[in-house]
Length: 56
Image (cartoon, rainbow, N blue to C red):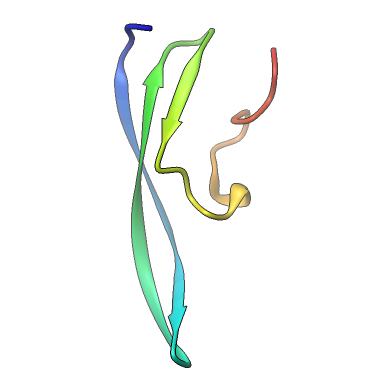
């Protein structure tokens, strides 16, 4: 599946040993309007752009 490669930056909070850290996550999107592969998606689906994860 050839197509463009886009990077989406999501932000969130990482908690470890009672400490909280603000982190940015790189999410890579490969594909086009008809088919897409998401690489290294955020752990929280609510941070994904609208429309991701819907079947057409």
